[in-house]
Image (cartoon, rainbow, N blue to C red):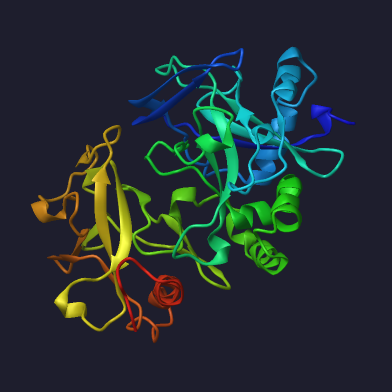
Length: 394
C-alpha cells in the first residue's frame, strides 16, 4: 500500500478574507479526536470562499511545491488523520467515512482538501484547517458528501462538508454544512470535479461506486469545466435556480456568474449592477457587500414576460453597506441604497428604477444584452423543467 503524500494530488483553497462566525451547531474535536462540546446556539467557524485569482489545478501544484505534501512530522500527522472514503452518498455513510481535520499552522485564513488515490482506487482525503485567531476551538469533524440541490439540473451537483456531532452517520441529518464567510454553504461544483485530474478518485466514487452521477452527466460536466479555469467565479455565484443566494460586492465592476442548465453552463459578466452613469462616468457611491438572489419579476409592468430582478436578502455585518469614501459625485437618491427584502434599484437616465433583465427583449440585440438574455434564460428554463418555489410557468 502506497501512502506517500509526495505522490498525492491536492487541492488548496485560499482566501484573504477574514472568517466570520454563525449561530449554529458547534462541533469541536480536540487533538485526541474527542468532542469538546456541542451547543446548538453557539458560534461556529465558517469557511472562506474560493480564491478568485488561481485555478484549482494551479492550487494543487502549489500545495506540492509549498511543502504541504512533504515528508515532515506534520505531513505524517495529516496522513494519519486522513480517511479512505468508500462513499459520498449520505444514505450509505459509515463511521469510517468520518473525517477529522488537521490544524495546519502554515495556512493563513485557508481551508485545504487533500485528495490522494488509495491502492484500490478509493480517495484518501485529508482536511487541513487553520482556524482564525478569534476562534479558539479545535479541529473540524464531519462527512464529505455529494449534494444534488432540489429544483436543479444534474449539472448543479456539488460536494459539501457536513459538520456532525459524532462519527456516527445517524448524526448526519442533525449536522450543519460548513459555510463560507457570507453564510452560504461551501461547495465544490461538479464541473470542477470532472475537469480536474486531482479529483479522479472522487469522480470514481460518484460514477462507479455510488452511481449518483451518470457517466453521461459527468462527461457533460467535463465538457463545461473550461468555464472554471479562469478562477474568476466564486462558488456562491454558481447559479441554477431562482432564489439561490449569491454574494454581491457593491464596488465590483463586473461580477462573473455561471448559470447552470440542463445541457450547458453559461458564463456571464454582469456589468455595473450597482453603478450609475452621469455623463461618461460610472459611479459606485456605496461600499460593502450584500447577499442577493435572482427571481422572476413580481411587478405588474413585467406581467407575462420573462424578466429577472434582484432581491436583496440581507446585508453583512462584517462588510456593511456604507458610503464609498472615494465617491465624489453628486448626491444620490436614498432609494439606491440596498434594503433587506427589497428589490435592487438602479439609476436609468437619471431615473430610479428596478434593476431588471428582460430575456425576450434582449434576444434581438447583437451585443451584450443578447448574451445576458441567454444567461438568464437558463434560470427560466430550469424553473419550467425542474419546478420553482416561485411558481413560474410559461
